[in-house]
Image 1 (cartoon, one colour):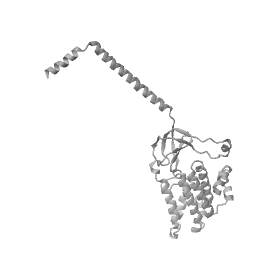
Image 2: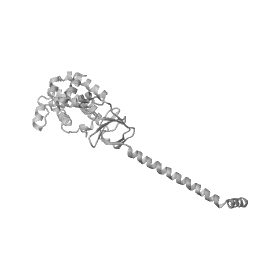
Image 3: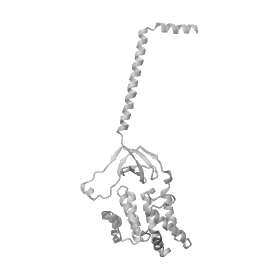
Image 4: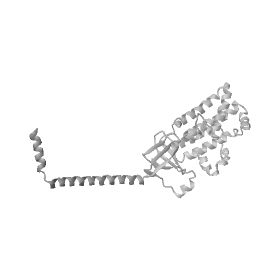
Length: 291
């Protein structure tokens, strides 16, 4: 053991001072180069982050493979996404690609409904998930279906009266159903409940004659013109959804053909909906005709 220790001491004694300086200098040079590399990499990373564009906003609509986000300036963006993000949730999305289609001047003149800008992003972060809206579509659709079924039971007139008021208030007077408002639903769900609501409205007069007139006069809200208000809402939502969701658009147009036959919806009735503005008549005619 002593011999080994003695050999180590003799080894260090044999190293010249100049050689030690060289080792120290080389180590210092490596350390400086490493520091320069780390600093450059950090600055480059910060620069890249500075150049990135982010969208911050609230989810206002969703489909099977996309979400619609509205920012604080009310600009709308369609972002491909298969994640089921509840409407009302706050999100941040890094813009990786703008997907804008070129349109001719003639197309621009004909285009009257502004579609959300489509952006590509694989970096979508939900910053504030509105978890209470997770089942909004399913819960409200179920309520409407239950109400239509209730109309088949003559012994449930009082419940039907209550539900009819709740439905009309939900659709047109900022009411709530199961804690949700109309704005908590996707456009696809809104179209479904409007179709059911039209069936309910057409049956309520036969079920409880004069009921709509009674509640109109006692509440100060209009319940007698519900049919036209439902049709107008359906046309508005379909017109908007057709600007960016072909599948839902086609289904909405197909469903409207059934509604047109079942509830005697005429073109003259639609033309009379002047409160929405004549600029929508072209799109409405396409929906009415099933084009």
